[in-house]
Image 1 (cartoon, rainbow, N blue to C red):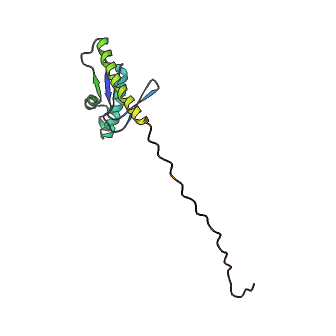
Image 2: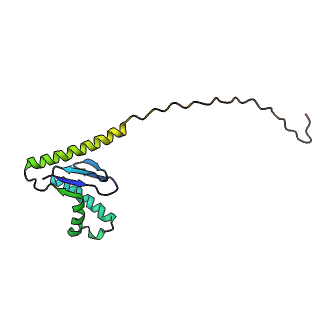
Image 3: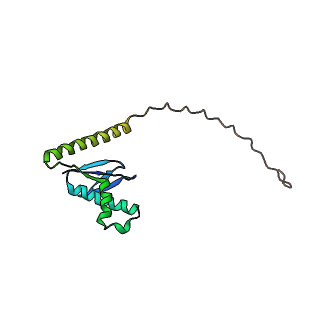
Length: 140
């Protein structure tokens, strides 16, 4: 059964599994083929959210954690067969890949080139006349 993790916070969340870091942007939903990976990601995310909400004392309380888990981790219901899970997983993966590709393409669009700014002609400075200082009591 595939699991879907959603980062419902307002900051990117970085999850590491087998020395590979994955950044999950705010509002982004990521499918995990293996339950263990989705569970691991959600466990760390829930801990961060509980600390952020000031519920440090309830970190070991499974009932309190379940409330947070329900917000960020969803399973595909009724997907007992591998084909059903793989089909839903692949569709979600495809949609996420399309969304990310569109975002990358729009970020990479070439910007209109601006015409180079014309340089103003530098004013030539004329040599300033040297003023000799006159001091009382000194003669030339």
